[in-house]
Amino acid sequence: MTKSVQNSTQGSESRHSASALEFAFDARHKSIVRGVFALESRRLKRLFARKPEVSLHQMESSLNDSVSVAELRKLIPHFIKFYTRDAEHAHQYFEALGRLLLEAASKERGDNDRQWFLLTQCLEMLQLAIQKSPKTLSVAAQSIIVAVCRIMGGPYREHYHYEKEIHKEMMTMLNVKKDPNDFASRDKIIKLYLQLHSYYEALVHLAEYEKIMKIKSRSLYRQKQGEIAYRKAGIFQAMVDFYYALAMNKGDDDSNKIAEMAKLNGFIMRFNRDNKRINIAPLKDLDVFSLNRTIKSMAAIANNFYTDATKSEHFQAGHKAFYFMAHNNWQFDNPKGAQQNLADGVRLLDLSRMSPSQMVSEKLRLMEFQHKIFNELGRQRKADELFQDMAKLRRERRNEPLASSA
Image (cartoon, rainbow, N blue to C red; front, side, top):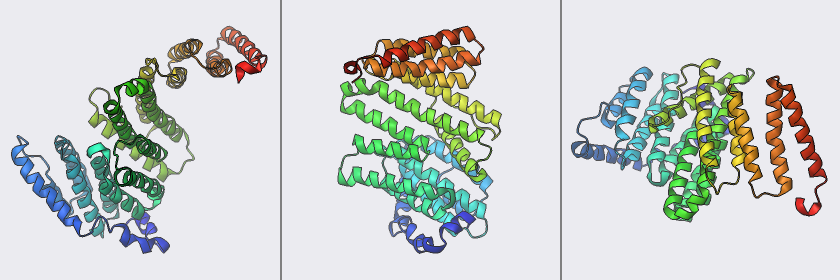
C-alpha cells in the first residue's frame, strides 16, 4: 500500500479499514459485476456495429494480468470513449469497471504507485457512473467513493467528509423525499462539490438542475435562465481564481499542488470529451506559461456565460456579471475589454430597480475598478475625473434622506 493509504489505516482508522470497503465487496459485488458482463455481451451483439477496442472483459483480464500503469493509461480512455455511446447503460459499465479497479487495488502488494493509480482511476470511473446515471444520482457508486476516500487518507481525507455529506443528500433525495428532482437537495450537492473543488461534478449537477427546471416549469426556467448562466460562469470563475492563486503561491505544499493540478487536468479531459462546441486549452505541463494558457481559456468560457446572464431581462445582477468579465479581461491583458465591461455595468445599474443607496454602492465598486485601471495605464486625467465623480457619489450617499436608504 502507498504511504497515504497506510497512514489512513493506522491507529483508530485501522478499525474502520475493513468495514470501509464492505459495501464494495459485499455478497452483491460479484453478481453486480457479472450482471454487467452479461449485459455487455447482449448489447455488443445488437447495438454496436463493431466491437470495442477495449471491452469490460478485456479490462478484467488486463487487471488480473497486472498490466503496467502505462498500458492502463492507454486502455481506459478507449473504454470510456466507446461505452459512453451506450447512453442507457453507460453508468453500469463505469460502475463495474470502478469495482474491478478497486478489487485489483486491494490485491496489489508490490507496486505502491500502481495501487494508487488504480484507486484514483476507480474514483474517476465511479464519478463517471454517477454522471451517466438517471438524474445524475447513484447511491451505490457514491457509497464506494466514500469508502475509497476513507481508506486513501492523505489528500483525500478532506474529500471523505464532503463525499459522505453528498452521499447523505443523495440518500435523502431518493429514500426520504423520494424526489430525484428536488431543487433544495440538488442545490446543496452543487455547493458541496464547489467546496470540495470538484468543479466538474458541480457543473454536471447544475446542468441537471437546469434540465429539471425546464421540464418542471418553462416559465420558472425563463425567469431563472440568467441566474443559471451566472452560476455556470461562477463555477469557471471559481476555478480561474483558485488555480491562478495556486500557481502564484510558490510556498504552497507541493503534494497538495500536484493533487489539485491532477484534478484540474481531469476536469479539462472530461469537459473537452463531453463538449464539442467549446474546449479548454489542455494542461500540457505544470509550468506557469502552460497553466496561464489553460486558465485564460477557462476565463473566456466564464465570460461567455456571464454574457448570457446579462442578456436575460429577469436577471437582476447583470452589473456583477460585467464586473467579473472586467476582472478576467484585465487579468488576461485586455484592458480595453475590461473598461467596456465596467462602463456597461454602470449603464445597466442606471436602469435597475434597486434602492438608490444600494445602486450607489454597486456603482462605486465598478468605478473603483475603473479608477485602478486608469491609474495603472497611466491615464491620470481620466483617473482624476473619475475620482471626482466617485467623491460626488459618496457625498450624495451621505446626504441621502433616511427614507430612501431604508
